[in-house]
Length: 483
Image (cartoon, rainbow, N blue to C red; front, side, top):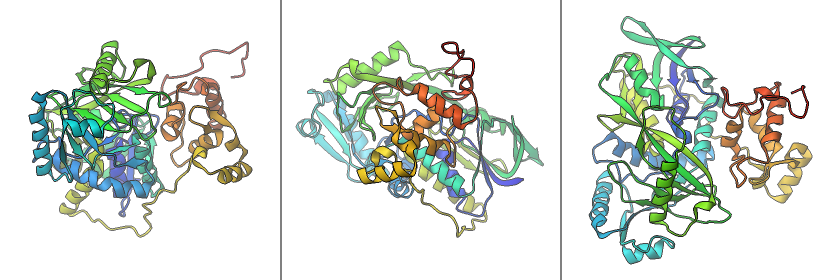
């Protein structure tokens, strides 16, 4: 089968662009080398929809950040994405930082960010109970928001699949197919696929792919690791999004609430050589804790229940987004999508569609495209009467598997049997919030392994955390050899 478009990468940018493309009469294929969608940068970030005051005026980041922020409200409504406009604060902790707030304010006004306000130290301490007593001013951006980054990515990709996009997991890009100087498809570990256009949405690996297309050999992605900690919502409650004044390394270590009520602190910022260096370090976690306490002093590191790291795809030397359509015939290049990439993602998809329209691409709307994702509500969100009816219909909903988050077997089965089936523990975690509470999965691992093995018609030995060799069970337990 020949496709119109092949998308390399299933992060938030690729997923939203895939959803836009299937609005039209196109055959679209998405390939993802991982065992599930959205396992890269889109799964390890600050979960903030930035307002747009931080990017330098005139950059593509500035344009697409502000536009993307505007698009998220409607998009979240269509797809049922957990999203809330909480607003954000950038806080100056010493008088010498006050000019930076003024600079950000002016940048934001130039970029078209609505509602920006500069607050005095007294106003800041009044608006943000628990902020450092040294706070001497802040910049408030009411349009900043918080989002569930896992579900936003998954819901967008699922909607694209339901509307006809083909998704191939475990399929890694190897090289391009060429004819007469134009790209006409790709070679993968699963064979060759031909198309009129190939879209590079490969995140931290996007520079490697564009180099294989023969362009921008002098550009490279510098992997930048950010480490985070997550606090137990049962012992610490925080409902704000607060940044320090930024520096040359980035926006700094924030203290922010999440859509699930936990407090998120981070990220650090360190250049690394390995794009897969997704591990935390003692020094990085120490920096995250110290940075968080500098902004919000009254919390205890004993309340940390999780820690993780993400890699940002900062493109050098430009440090701006690089989005090109047709610079190489048949190739769409989306590279260097670091912060504010998540906020900008809907606008990136819109931007590419407009560039295709300018190229004369036949954008023929499909009358049967359905932009609405029908929700699969978790059992814990149902009313008592809805729960009763749900259990009557399927008793699996009456069996709690994850006690901290109240996730039932029925919730898990709905995702294992869904349009993009969850095949690993982490795939279920991203879809349902399984194993993210105080015990971090300690009480549910064995039950989830049993359910995944049964539903996938395999042995316990083949059940993994995130695909590959991340197995849970390696040998018989208590003399059992039937696993």
